[in-house]
Length: 305
Image 1 (tube, rainbow, N blue to C red):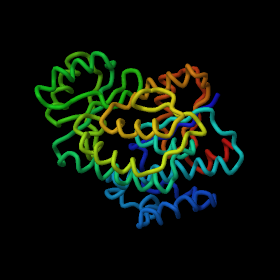
Image 2 (image 1 turned 120 degrees about the vertical axis):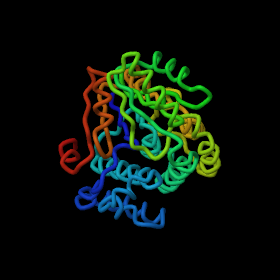
Image 3 (image 1 turned 135 degrees about the horizontal axis):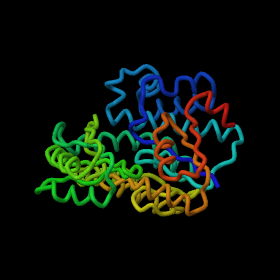
Image 4 (image 1 turned 45 degrees about the vertical axis):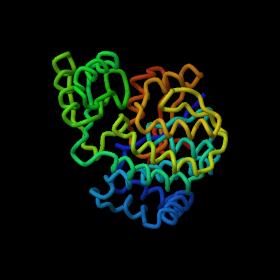
C-alpha cells in the first residue's frame, strides 16, 4: 500500500514551483487559480521572493499548499495510481484533504492564508518561541516542559521522529525548558526562526477564529482515507476532517504516531508530494523498512511517473 504525504511550513524557498509551471500545464492552472482566489500573485512570490515576504506565515502557508497541490495534480493527470492513504504535517493536512477530494483547492488556499494570519496575530511578536530538542523522547520532554512552565505555556508541539521533537510556548518558558533539556541529556537545543509559537495553547485565539472560517466551507467525505495529526486516526468523513483541522491549531503534530498508524494499516511506500524533503527524512527514521520517494521537482516527477 502507498501513502502520499504532504509537507508543512519549513519547506518554503524562493523559486519553488517555477520549474513545474514551465513544464506542466496542470501546475500553471493551479497557480493561476491560487492567484485569482487570493487576489494577489502568490505565483510571483513563490518564483521570485523576496524571501522576507515569503517567510511570513500568511504567505508561506498558501505558497506551500499551492506547490503541493500542483504536484498532486501533475501526478493525477499522468495516470499515476492514487494512494490508499494520505497524510500531511500541520499545514500539509490541507493539501492532503484537497488530494482526498474533501476540500476544494480554492477554499483551501483562501483559508490557509487566513490560518497563517490568525496564527501570527494570536501572539505578539517576540512573546513566543519554538525550539527543536534533539536526543530526548516525548515522555521526558513533556515532564521538562511541565517543570519549566512556571505559570507560562511551553509544551511539545511537533513530535517529528524518535529523538527529534519541537517545543513551543512563551519565549522565557521555552528557554527554561531548553536549558533543562540540555541538563537532562539532550544532545542539542536549536531555537527555530519562526514568526509565532505554533501548535501550543497560545494558539487558542487563532483556533477560535479559524473555526468560524472552516464552518463556512463545504467538506465532502474523503475519497482517500486520511490519518490526521491531532488524533493519528483514520478519517473518512468531511465533518471529522474539519474538526481535526480546528483542533490541530493548538495541539501537537503527532507525526511519529501518524507514520506508525499508516504502517499498521499496511502502508509500505511513502511518497512526499511537495517542496523539500523534510518528511522523507523523518519517515526514514520512523519506518525504516518502508520505501520513501520525494516528488517535488520536474526531474523527480519524471522519475516517478
